[in-house]
Image (tube, rainbow, N blue to C red; front, side):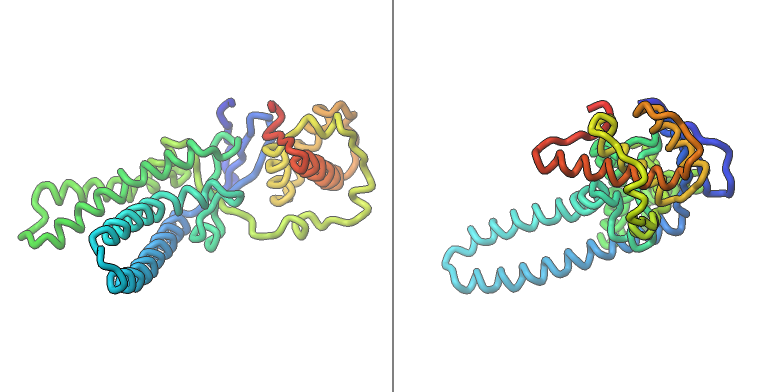
Length: 295
């Protein structure tokens, strides 16, 4: 997949993303404050989940130990359960939500932002795993070592402690020294965080029954595209940018062999979106899945 190309900015955080298919998509890079706020919310949710988990485990542990004569075996079982839970709390939370359809954790969704691929393609598991593993190097590990030093009863930070402080500050200010507010993890993974529209698609599209009846598409025309192209089309309709819709409509017409006319671009795209979505969902019911146009 070819690299994305960005046209000149309209405002400080507005970008034009040119996808590998040559489509121009407008988007807005998430602010640094929104990203920091989302991370704090997510860490709060994780901490609350851990507190609830240990409270429940404490109650369960008391009941089990009082009803059994083999507390050692039960204690080992509880330790294993705790280790598994903490592993998923540390990694599973971010991975599962960012790999979902929304590409966002609960904290990001509350602040209206999401993770996206910088090349205009689909957000992959490799990207999400990479950006979250790098977070350990940026924040989790040095933060844990600093807490250990702070509560270890020592007389001060020392050289090792101050080195950790400098390490944390470097990565904390990293988003402030690049125009797209990228973390080191974003650079490694090829991702960025952008603003996400909150409107539901049917409302954003303002669909009317006449729209679907205006254009008719055959199976051969709909079989050209897959789920990834459907998502791109959905984003174009959500942003409601006339220039982007005109470019996408022209690209689709060329691809399916239609002659480019001077009709309503949005009406054409809404009709094609409905037809393509129905076609893909029908195929999935019969066990056939088309990830993208190359499948």
